Length: 130
Image (tube, rainbow, N blue to C red; front, side, top):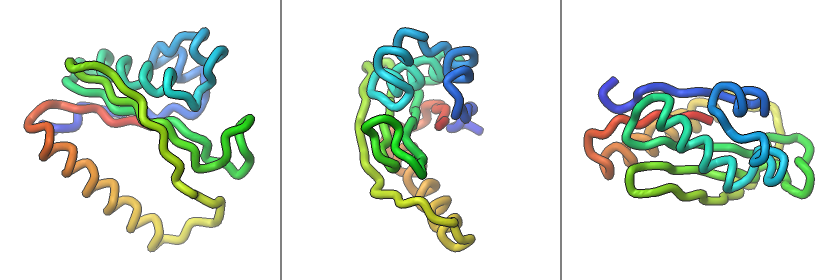
């Protein structure tokens, strides 16, 4: 693809550490669902794929809270040549058995979001991972 270089799905801290080189200190001091972790994930995936931008999503899927973070808490990390930032979001997600139509709608919305990012960024290569 001329836009998407690659991606990594990393649920376990060990994968964040061993594949995407998130520092143990970051995981210990801030947790996997944090601004700091999201930024490191984005910066390190950008380096891994030698891309212009790296985007990460790290969050609490539930059904239980993770410490004081409720299910649906998400941090988005963005890293580019212009710098790095972390954005917190709350999806309001409630655990339930996901139906086929819900999945198709979410995939369509993700595709629209990626197209919007591509339109704003031009022709740079961007890995996306969660």
